Image 1 (tube, one colour):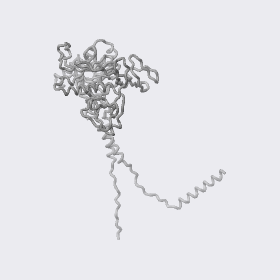
Image 2 (tube, one colour):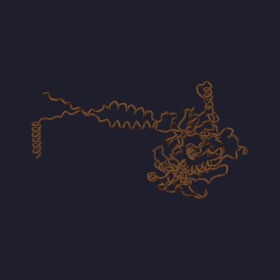
Image 3 (cartoon, chains in turn orange, brown):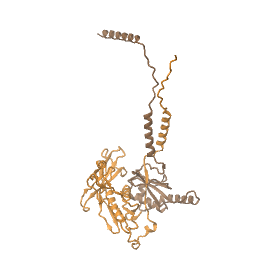
Image 4 (cartoon, each protein chain N blue to C red):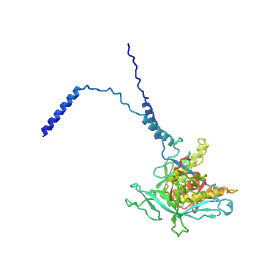
Length: 269
Length: 183
């Protein structure tokens, strides 16, 4: 009798080595092609030459809004055809990163003061400023030292507004309605988001954006909104840092003003 | 004492040798040890998916200049094709990589127009117009992207913008670092 030869079939695995090689090549190619810094462009609106050249009072259309944001070294003021809003005062806090030892430190900006590195005592150059914080200050007039303004921030660092358009001073309770500047719809606070919200110093950019957002919404609801409802001009002095202009352009765009023009105090840009 | 220890060690070695000699050496025929790469494949799939999500399909229309830090913006749009790039850092102002002015000199001058830059831009605009007439390019729209260091004073920005406008490049866009996902 022949022995029945039943071969025990071994569990055969798929040969994944070629797949592995393929993946290695693909990952290398994709990494070499990847751009990890995201560059973008901010569009600037330049008025027509004829419009910019007319400086005569009779040519100005009274129905136009002529919304303007004026940046000075202590405050930001919003003006329009009808007048000016109360100024938003700020305290400028600068975060420096030393080019010599990469040491990071913060300093409240005082005009004309030379800032020295705490590690080597070297005088810092203006180009070592890494981040500029404009902390909004609540004060009655320019002589009042004022107090910091605080607001509840969402996990992305955006301050939260209540349905009436004012900042939440404390983190809103679960079920409360809230929105950030530029949001069209109100959101409802849930427990997960609430746990990640915090109260922090309010930025002057956010405060200006809130005022502009409220104005834009009011003008939109008018029966005949002004023709320049989406236009805004940023007016600044020649010493103002470029970063402040860009942040202000961002705030204007967040508030719904798509056409942002720039102007230099004392001349057109 | 040392001699006793050495004797004990020698005896121990002999006993071990006998023990090994009595037993049949059973060497199992082992299968070839293969590398388990399934988990590694999983890792590669995740890395590849992440990378494909991260990179943009449109390629690099705009590259950041060296020696400057661009400001961050949450409302920036995707870069478009432009005719020219102007870069302004703490030392120089360059047009398409060629230095046209020193930043310090531009800061000191009273005039809104940068003389050396006007000449360069006017020549470039002329070339662009000729190319348009010859049908090499669709239209000489005068699109220009300016990359400024975020710590430059606004004075420099306005002077460069005024010069661009004067030379016919009125479609000015600012290059920024995007901190938004959309756009």
